[in-house]
Image (cartoon, rainbow, N blue to C red; front, side, top):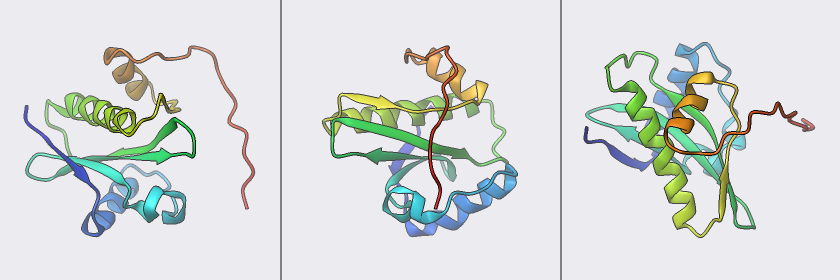
Length: 133
């Protein structure tokens, strides 16, 4: 399949917001997203299908998060679309000079897609430690 992967635009933001609602998930505040939601990537055929964000740091480590897809997209290539977007975001981060790209997920589908793509996946449970303002 042929997909187009491009940077997220302002026109995409409301579409992505609708995806969070459609999945019955809490959408992240824009100020928690890189570039207020614009420093991410979207995969599309004729329409947008999924989006993901790459967090760059002041070191050679990048973080990928907030993968979201169109809940109405039920085509047979759905898994391929998600795997393609994940791989593209990792490749983009590595091509920007990062040495490690990491992510966290408890979504078994995402974890399996990453394993299928040859990524290392820790089997240990980790705690996320954070403080919220």
